[in-house]
Length: 68
Image (cartoon, rainbow, N blue to C red):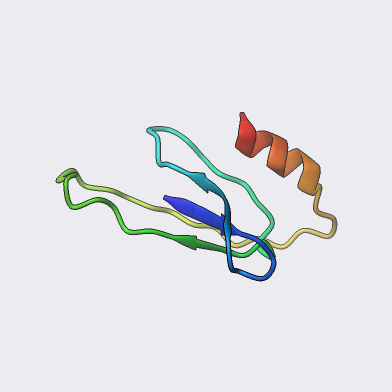
């Protein structure tokens, strides 16, 4: 699970549960963390993260993508 916080990092404002064949795009400056998988799930879980640089970030497009 990916959890997003407010700027003060005091409240969770959004979270995303893992789903098969799902990808997630967001601006790295948004406060976030990853949570470990549940112990109830005994299946192998693979995570791949890319850190990229971009001259201009379209945050609105990323948020719309997350919501879909």
